Image (cartoon, rainbow, N blue to C red):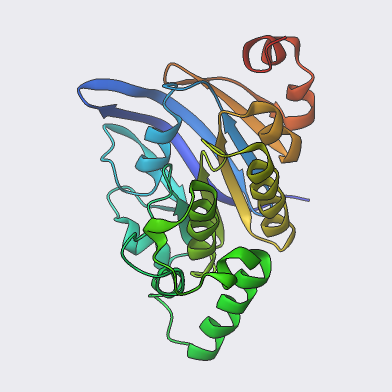
Length: 239
């Protein structure tokens, strides 16, 4: 059975701060997959994500979403097409309440009842957000802000969810919760591209994986096989 390619990156080159951070990258994400892009800090993972979502211009190559080039499109265009990102550092609206942040996630929608139902759904996934729905997002802990950022992205009902370092800086307990939610979102039919430094956790829940080093893809394949690969284990799992 052939699966539809939802996201295809070809020959991608991106400069960031005068340095070529991404040096000709190719990868793809198929419908119904959870794909992990792993690599150490500074490998070019976040630059790649910013290029995909139109927040950084690209020097060369192309990005196709659902069979069409999205090169040069802004993030607001892409959200309307079902491509949503949870950025590194969360990016919540700090002076807005939790509820207002979630409503902002649904700004492209005009189905008021559906939006209300989805807010309830986010609150069922993250009960802590429900308890504090009127609290300003900027006064929450890092883990709570990560929950909110994920909930806000889900409010747009994405076809593809891009997650950039969702576990960064979180307590082990909160990391468990975040990965549990990523698994649940994927199980509900959302295609996921997960960028993570935590290689063992990322590959542990993925179908396929890509390793990025110094702006290039150095390895790719079945995630479980990669998890057992001696090179991956030596480089990313401290073995």
